[in-house]
Length: 441
Image (cartoon, rainbow, N blue to C red):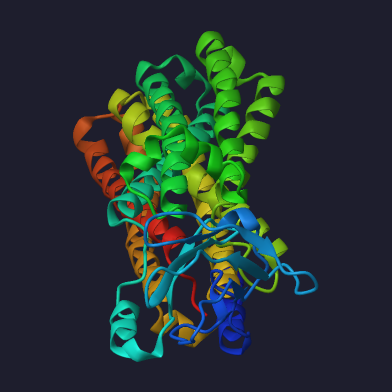
């Protein structure tokens, strides 16, 4: 344990040094400049508008709309690269022309938007200024909150399913026949699939700056499936369908299937696919080393799933049985698995913080950094509860087995595990908010 603490201390020191010395990571796609510039007044209305972004964009991800809601055609500018687009403007009917623009980040689907206004007649400068003061378009708050809720449900379902399957396969094969464990896995699968389908529609409405009704329209799904975030969500949905085969085989075969090497290989492949598809919608690709970010994100999600899924399975299915043999066999094994998982979570989380935030200043002075610090604080409390659980395992487990799972003996452990589980739900909520937040620059 002393060696492990030293290793974590060295890793933490290295990451903090990196935060102090590394240049900031790139954030979401933003507009750098436009031609004509916002607020320009001329005697003649411009025929087209050139937009230059701070990184390459896909034409399907760029939307430019008139105040009436008409979408304007967007094309490439020859010889200007993929970060520059040209917009054909409509004929102006008054003394000013206003358009709204939005762009979706290719990596994580975050929407950036703004408003541009051009005066046509210099004689009405005040009228033009008034139009320029109108608020820029932004994603609907209800859509944003619904998207956060769908992502929270998706993260929780993923952790319960992957961690629960691993718990049964590695520590408790008999649990495949336990009704509570079966219900937990079935509920996790159902919510995982439904949250993915809902996220597709909400992501489309979010990208189009629409409302909740837009999330139910087939056209919204068709549009979002042409984007990288949409394809990642579609891949996740297909993997949840494959997960149904894994779950059905386990529920039908019971402990025999849980011990089968072939089933374990298939379940592991589907689980890794779900973890990677989920990570593709996050910020791990932001920064100078996207490859390391992707690996760290996969390790982080795997550690969280093994920890949370196993913890929930222990709370819901194992402890209520108070079977002495199961307590003696399962609890110590999970304690070791949780220790490894927490170590992986901390190490991968530090790498991701280094990769995404990019600087110590951004950690302290951006909303993303504040959310990250909040998540770290709650996680520290969770680890304190986990330490109490581990201490019980070391000092009281043998007594609980001797007393054949006496309720009074097991109860303190149950309280500690329940507190740990509840706080983990808060950590997942903050994680969902981080996905929609702008990374530190």
